[in-house]
Image (cartoon, rainbow, N blue to C red; front, side, top):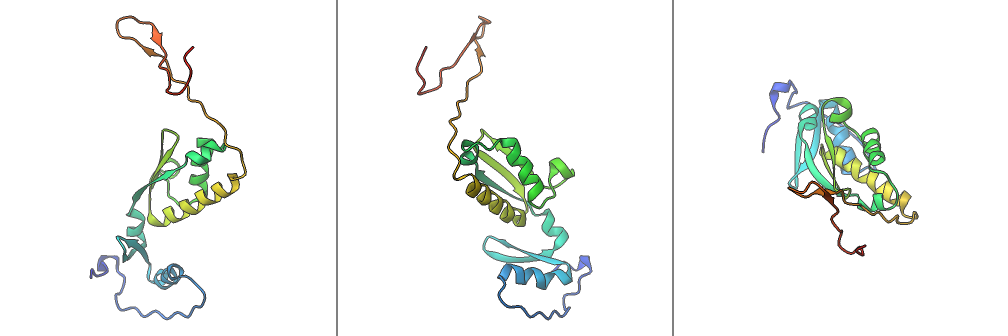
Amino acid sequence: MKCIDTEEGIPTDAPVTLQFQGITGDVLMSRWLKPLQLAHDIENGLLVITTMAKLQERHVTKLYDVRELFDRGLHPSRLIAGLSKTTPGPWQATDGEGGTLTLFADTLLAVRQTSRSHDEIAKFLASLRSQLSDQPVVPRIVMPKPVPVVGVGEPIAIQPPGLPTT
């Protein structure tokens, strides 16, 4: 078992007394550790107790499939803006430091952020899915850009699979 880093000046023998009923273990741990300026996280199935400052430095990258949200009419820029404003940061794009949001091929959202923020991101995405579930699926056709043929100089269009040729 690793000891709390005493460089932060937190006494390792500080007493804490709490009485709570009807709350989750996560909330209990947060309330228990906060007076000591400590925080907790789960890493590889193990409880990790660290300082609040060090927890903010612990970023994890997760991928979220967001294709369904876009298929139901949500614009990618609105998703990114909503995540940046609604979920805890800090975010590199708005705060100059912190986590990042990167969209790949309008289907996968790569998020690098703390575990706590990932919990909130998952709740936010679930809420969006629930709100958009009654929206019809909007077919999206991605038109390929012309690709120049080397040596000829005239563009050609690449035919996407499944579309009839003209």
